[in-house]
Structures are given as C-alpha cells and as structure tokens.
Image 1 (cartoon, helix red, strand yellow):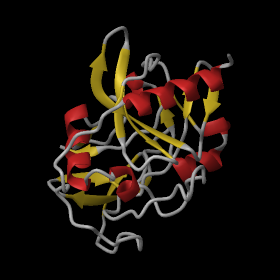
Image 2 (tube, helix red, strand yellow):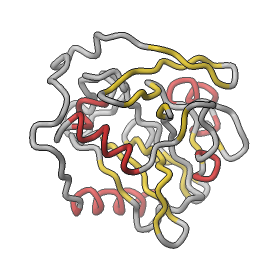
Image 3 (cartoon, rainbow, N blue to C red):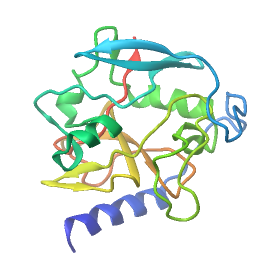
Amino acid sequence: MNKTKSFLLAAAVAAMAFTFSCDSGGGGDDGGGGGGYSGSYGSVSHGGQTYKTVVIGTQTWMAENLNYAVEGSKCYDNLDTNCVKYGRLYDWSTAMTACPSGWHLPSEPEWDVLLNYSGWDSATKLKATSGWEEVIGDGNGTDDYGFSALPGGGYVDGSFHNVGFNGLWWSTTEDVNNKAYSLVMYSHVSLALILSFTDNSKSYLHSVRCVKD
C-alpha cells in the first residue's frame, strides 16, 4: 500500500474509532447559522506578516494558519501560493517555537476548551465558509466564531498529502514513541478530532494555530 493510501486509511480508521465527548449543548451560541462570522477581529504581527485574531469564549486565537518562514517548515507542494492560502506546514519541534512572543502552540487541553465551546459539530462551526473540497456534500463550514479553519494538508515521509481535504494542527502534547497529538478536521466530518495517529511522528509537517498566553 502506498504512503497516501496508508495515511488516508489510518485517518479514516482513527476517525471512525474516535468517540467525541463534550458538554451536550456546547458552550457557544449558534453563531451565524451558515452566514459566517460577523464579529470583530484583532491583529498580531510576526515575521513581517500581520494575522487576524479572534476571541472565542475565554481564549484568543489566531484566525489564520501561521505562515512564518523558518527551517523545519514548508509550503504545500513547495509553492508560495499555497503558503499564502493555507499557511506553512511545520514539524513538531519547529511548531513548538514558531508562534510570536505572547502566543504559543496550544496544548491538547487548550484545543479541548475550543471544541467544548463550539459544541458537538465543532468542525462545521470552526471551518471556513470556503476552501474545503466536497467529499460527501459540502465540506465547507459555517465559521460561526471567526476561526476560519482551512485544510492545509500535511507532509508525510517526503510527500505532501490531502490539501483541501484534511486540516491538521499540532498541539504541544506528546504521545509515546516520538509522537504528538494533533487537532484534525476532515471535509466530510462535522466533528473536530484530537488524535495521535498510529504513525503521527513529530517529523511530519502539520499546520499551526497560535493561542494567546
């Protein structure tokens, strides 16, 4: 089985096996109901680029994937246009130090706070209203809170995979055997999942979102 099929199979099996639990109603309101976020944004500058930021519940998040050029990161397919759209992909050790001063890579519990706030259909509410490929119905979200998640794909064992279909964001939380946990969203799944894939090595490249200290 080739690397792409193995990666997709591992992701599908993990998604089917995962049981998501949170507060039954979610902490947030129903938001825009499909119209996208209508609230206000802040901003933070880092490495010559200014990023939108947004308050979601008790947390302040970057509302864009990090696009900070540093060794240990790549643009999908090595194309600058993909960095502009999706941000860069980072290995875990680089992701740990890539956020601007006053911000940091979220831990698994910090991702949990965001998912519990947004409720059981967290991916639908956190995904951008465009940019996700259709798999089973429309893969786009309602972007109720302005998080605007985009599917930057990943880089696994020398190959890029699944841009437009999967979004994977590192956490600081480590697993055994040089692995770490990631937040994962799929085009065809309404839940956002926090997983450590069987082969989710820290050497793989995922997207980064920073949360304020």
